[in-house]
Image (cartoon, rainbow, N blue to C red):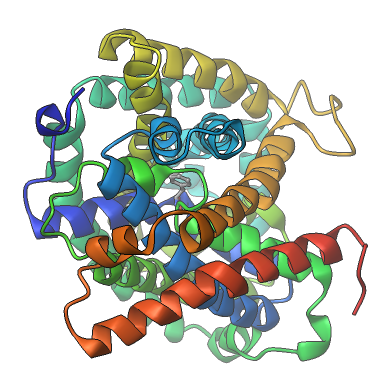
Length: 450
Ligand code: PHE
């Protein structure tokens, strides 16, 4: 497809809303609190913010540069810029990682369907934390969870079939601001809970001695996951950007808003965790067990609860749409499939692995590799390994391989101040990001100790 035939985002607000729409999702509201909870709270938060600044914003900018310069899918982008098999590997990593994430992500997105229904039934009158635990376990280990996973993927399919501009842009423009306001209201509510100070202390007071290699690996993986980085999602989206979009500004606003939403989620969850006597280190169930308690405690709780899970479902959808677009753009542009077939193939793969992931909470519980079930394994391999690896390749590629003139042109360097800023970004891409990623990997693998 030629440059002029490709769809483009219509407005600047559209660009921001869709990139934030891709970034903000279950990663912020479900994954961030549980990862922070498992990895010691404040220490995790500190490292997380550091990674967003020195790796997240530069790598997001790098993806935008590649995408808008080549107007191509992730694989084609590397092929156009440098025709060597090595760089194309990065495209393959992105496509594989996007399909892995889509599979397990849809399971959790499916849970939001169930929780919308449960909210309508007021969680069957559950009054204790134990009752909510039992409900969650019973549901996730049953076939119902598979049905919701498939239902979610079907909805995703129906939207992505329609293409870029119609579906994604319109929905994100309305949705993101509403979600933001609702989260803010929940934050205020949590600040009045008895466990508020304990919760905030857990989240914001770093205990430096608890920064372990696992915390570093977890925080780095979370930064990549939450910002939709390292798999070419932003390359794909920015291939639809117009020449007027400001790339550095868009990367920084996206990262800022995404991090703000994650912090909001932490402020909502942790005061409640301590108020209701939960453990912060519950893992993936955390949010689904704690949130209902919050709602059951609120005035008009049922209404809030329905509204929240509907929004969470929609925020997940804007994220899965962006993940799907990565492989669909590849299938259509590189493999010359019709959009219809590409969408079908994407959905079929995700349905297969999504079903296995959903079953790994129940009947397939004992099918493990290195102690991890299918869901866990897909999450670990993609977020903790493939995304940072992809991010490292992207940052080295833009920092060292592509022409400086391309970077300067894409980042629209017109003033000395802007030139200085761009130099900082290039410095991060050449040295800081690859070194940090490598060190975190080596410490995670136990090769270096500190
Ligand atoms: N960033 C999304 C979230 O936080 C997940 C995502 C990952 C989306 C990778 C696209 C690509 O929910």
